[in-house]
Image 1 (cartoon, chains in turn brown, yellow):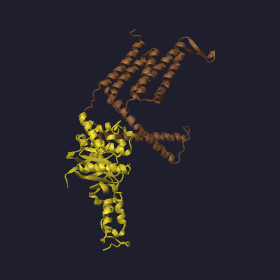
Image 2 (cartoon, each protein chain N blue to C red):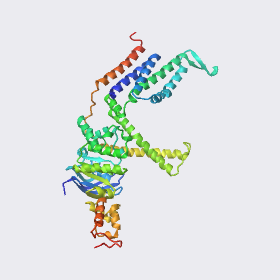
Image 3 (cartoon, each protein chain N blue to C red):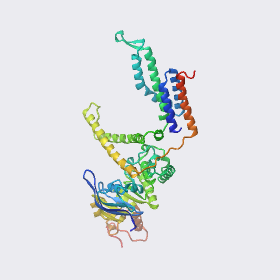
Image 4 (cartoon, helix red, strand yellow):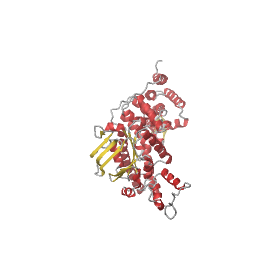
Length: 243
Length: 288
């Protein structure tokens, strides 16, 4: 599907799911986005790994809510002197937070997990993201492996000359690591200078005509409209409309 | 001499730390030629290439490329007409996909979308990288990245292409592929200037050789220059390997040493052909 359509549909779904109030609507959102992700070729393993990122964030927030929301305690924990208990209303709020984050991650995954980087950047540019931001994102993705390769080579260079790392508490290891990061920074600075020159050499600075993206295919537009309708339907059902 | 496309006259340039990289260098490059800019590390080869592309501007002296003086008003136009392939393709190939990277130059020229697409496809075709179009550059081998870097320059349809150590870090197959592309471009009329310290490559590839040392031009001429051991030693270079073999064979003197594998094969075939008496004996005395 066209990245622009996916981006808009995915955004609509994210906005819709974070406003849902009923677990049933959130469960439906999860079922729908999960089915779409599986249908798009994302295997159950990758889907599960994406889901795991929910818990450090949503889980912690939910945990705090479960104990701090005002209401009746339903499950005391530890000795009574601690005064620690799960609150009924807090447990419901925690469940909603976790489900919302989960559904939002899956809804965003409809775009991020199924779109190549270049298409994603084009999509972002098409909906108005400044070129500077998309270029920075592209350069980061492109040069992280290059910087990581340089770091590995320098690290191996140390190992090859008898350096034995003994954990982060080991002073020579700490200072060596600091020196490596410093060197990596300087090399990256040099590389950025060379990259800029290479861009100049290919005409950076000419008043270029912006490349216009082609039209969205009708089938893609219809599929996108269906996804936006699903998001809207979820929202209306959650609010009890039209019944 | 054919009309020069590049004229450098008394070019001087110092880096911001005060190091003089070029000291009054003068050089002319004929249209359609394959010039090897030979010199050791630090001779100023890369700095000279940056001047020929208009990225650096002369601190003293002047540079004319395709009849246009290089200055701050003309440097953008010069960059359109003179392509520069950098030594490390990771410094040049930066976009998320090969296709987008090759399209970078033509897009900067403000060409219509269709024309950009046509140029990208033609450039990828020319370097045999059509199948890489949708690949991410960081997933490519060094040889593939080098070919993509050349395609990025070809897509701008330059009259002159400058190459900084184009075969550095390439394996034999990668080097051969790059040199084949350069041969084809040169046959189509593109002037090529290659900075290298590889004397064997210069002997095999170039029709003109310019030897640099310490930011100055030491000599310029045909590949026969590479037989001048004193000149090469002055520039911190060695003679071509093939020439070294024949130079050490005492019986070969005073004939000019072959410098390329092809010349060596011809010489040896002439030497060993039945009925000829061109060989030399083990004592170093040439047969009559």
